[in-house]
Length: 323
Image 1 (cartoon, rainbow, N blue to C red):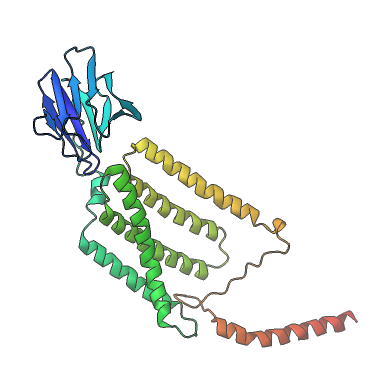
Image 2 (cartoon, rainbow, N blue to C red; image 1 turned 30 degrees about the horizontal axis):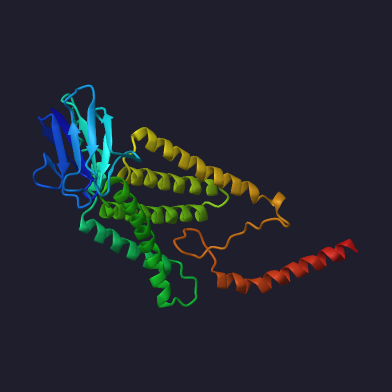
């Protein structure tokens, strides 16, 4: 007796056939022992001979697309239990009677919890949330000038298009590696992380403005953003690949090291020692969501003549004192 595992790349779900015969025929024709619904498989494609338990044989029956083990074409060859072959767009693997299926997957693990994050209501709710966020960010950044309608449109589309692009790329990867796109849960996850990142950036902006002089603010902001990106990267790998946890964690660690390495290289390369002139670190903030008093760009520009006059008077006094 042999057990044949059949995996079609179009649906991604394996099925199993148990055959109690010494010779097994495989193909699309209805008189085969195993019938495949794959248009790239011939009517009579393969014959398995398991008469000798120590020398199983597989034979390709002069088919159109052939039979492959890995990348090598097969005509007649011996094989061992567990070997995998490709015919058309179908993978088959043959086991002996001692074969045991893997343990059942848990519906409570993180992957399935993320897959449950796929309702249309969540998609609509998060999209409306991002639209309101985009409109509010434009309105709260108002600094005295005219706001054109296209500015509101750009503020909304910037927040919505980026998650769509990331979700489309991840869904394509999932289609290739898992046989299913999983677009809805990936898109909802991307929207949730984008919304969280927007509001974390808002909170950090308020703290940075209202707590001036705090050291390490830039690095703290960068580290928080890295944490969010890394968590998103790890979750996307969980949904799109079949990698084991150890490999997923290793790739995530390499991803973190790459981000921090590029950050420190960039930071080191922009030191004043490498500049023809010192960097100017003064910053001008629009007065949105501030607790301490701020100044608008228009007010700041209006105060410049007075500041210049005071500077001229101070320079004249210094000149008189030197004389």
